[in-house]
Length: 110
Image 1 (cartoon, helix red, strand yellow):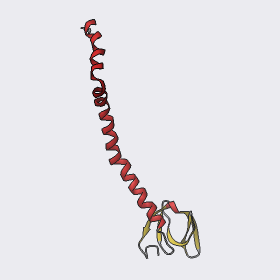
Image 2 (image 1 turned 180 degrees about the vertical axis):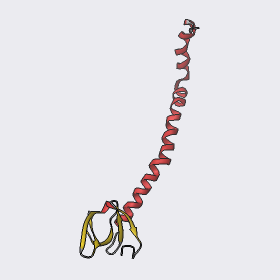
Image 3 (image 1 turned 90 degrees about the vertical axis):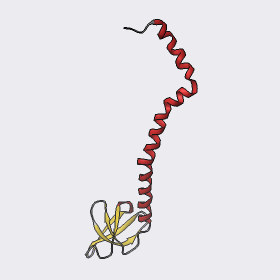
Image 4 (image 1 turned 30 degrees about the vertical axis):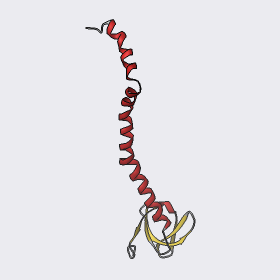
C-alpha cells in the first residue's frame, strides 16, 4: 500500500535527470498564462488609455462633453489640468481634464 523504500530513494534521481528541460516544461504553463493575460487584459486597457488621453488632449473651446459624474456641458475655457464647463446659462463648473468621459455631438446639451 505504501511506496517501497527502494522506489522512494530513486525518485529524486529521476527528477534530477530532467534537468533544464524538466524545469522549462514546469514553467511553460505560467509563461503561457502571462502571454494570454497580456493579450486579453493588459493590451486592450493600454489602448483605451491611449485613446482617452488623445481625446482629452484634443478638447477645444465650444466642445460639448460628458463627465464621469454625469454632468453635461459646453467647454468655455481650457487650462493645463482643468477645463471650465458651462452647465447652464451663467453657471460654470471647473473640472479636471481626466474627468471627461465623452465628447458629445454639437447641439446635445440644450
